[in-house]
Image (cartoon, rainbow, N blue to C red; front, side, top):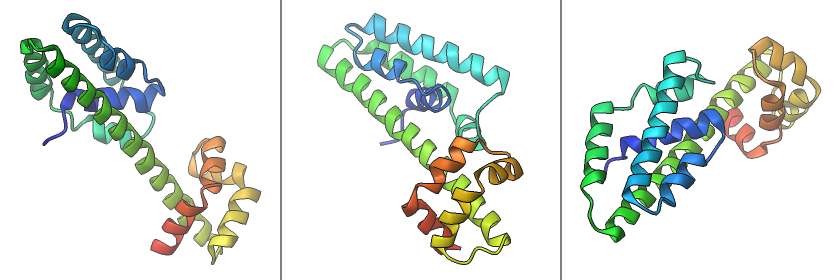
Length: 172
């Protein structure tokens, strides 16, 4: 079963805003009218974000560019045709679950990309082992953030993710 395009829109909003508002509104909508209104609001906010072109990272930007808005329109039409409350709940739950899964994947992919960038930087600075990588990150957070144009909190977060560091360091 292909991923719903509406779910992709909501996943981008979650990734960009860090808010689960639309997932909550859609999954808990007591009626079809309120569900469609929540989808409309999500699309409005997505359009505002996309028209500014200010995505927080290229992983989200690339994902957003894959959204098929002709399919979004078809999905909205399909939802508007649902007359059975159980089927409506099921569809809205699937949209919400997919959006959560996709947003988690976006975050994970972004973390991997940053960790890989940091590992390559560390290797270029003489780091030879994962243990040394952890120490290197811990003692050079500001320099790494500045040199790689990253947020210091993100560098700190990546530096504490031993499993991810091991994966990217050994994978090269």
